[in-house]
Length: 129
Image (cartoon, rainbow, N blue to C red; front, side, top):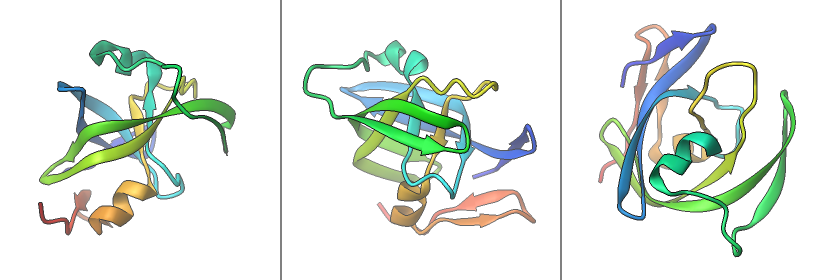
């Protein structure tokens, strides 16, 4: 998958499926320093992903500060040819001062055996469906 450089950072596009509804996210930061994958709450509402009574709520900490998030499981997450089913994500406000749909974190990269090739600006997954 081709990497796009925005704000001097690597971005990819992904597709998420939640309760049968599909959404393509074009501005997803590729972040090896993020333990988990985080999606923008405002955007995820488009496919009916909203906080529910039984969702786990957590606090995450990063360079941007502290943020409250809730946890959901996607039907699937699709990045190029890699498709992971029942994939756990965190949902938050993502008010970072830049337009961003989500963060593709280390949990996805590790599970798919991804390699980031900055010379070719490619994300290569070794995942076989």
